[in-house]
Image 1 (cartoon, rainbow, N blue to C red):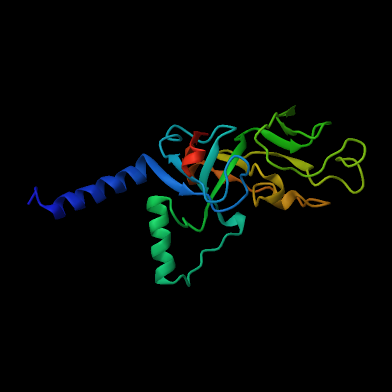
Image 2: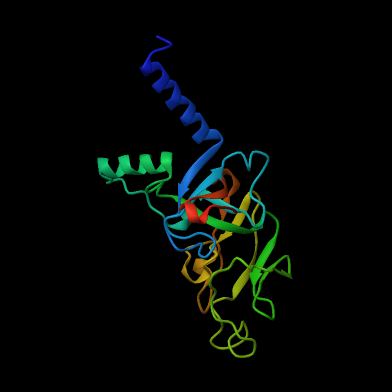
Amino acid sequence: MVGSTWFHLAAALVITGLVLSFVAKPYWVPSSSMEQTLMPGDRVLVDRLAYLGGGPSAGDVVVFDAGDAWGIQQNTADSPLSVALRWIGEVTGFGPTGPHTLIKRAVAVAGQTVACCSDDGRMLVDGDPVDEPYVGSDYDFEPGVLDCDTEPRSLRCLPETTVPEGAFVALGDNRTSSADSAALCRTPVPEDGCWRFGYDGEAVGRAAVILWPIDRWSGL
């Protein structure tokens, strides 16, 4: 029995399941929110061991399951085909993954304050301007013409918040096209509590490598 084809197939499936559950997992990038770092259709390998000792660090590209505050609703009417395709996508990275799963960059973590903008339009973390060479696009900002003190003000401007314990701020590198932690704050007059957060316990892992397409192989 141990030498049978069925035994080897079952063992391979068990080992694959354990690897995907605890070590590494492919993920299909579904949108343009992380351009130019990640493009729609890229497949990345997610390190599921990265956050065993805690949560993401600032700068990490994180795959995480979004909570209710993100307004993502599970479609309970999914067809059997949709469910099957999602399962295949979660296992292989070639196809749709979980409906609540997002990929963004952690720009601030628990206990840090975050806001925008500095005098030259940069994000502020603990009051210090942050260099973000990975940002693919951002809202217009011109000191004295369109900034945080003009009327109207730049949509790049964000109210200050302190990241809660066990949480992180997750922004897309493509700031003008990302439903991220700051999306609800990008209004002429942001409401209190407009920030939403990713949580350490919901982090699937850190995106470590672009696997596909082949001409985009690189570390993250």
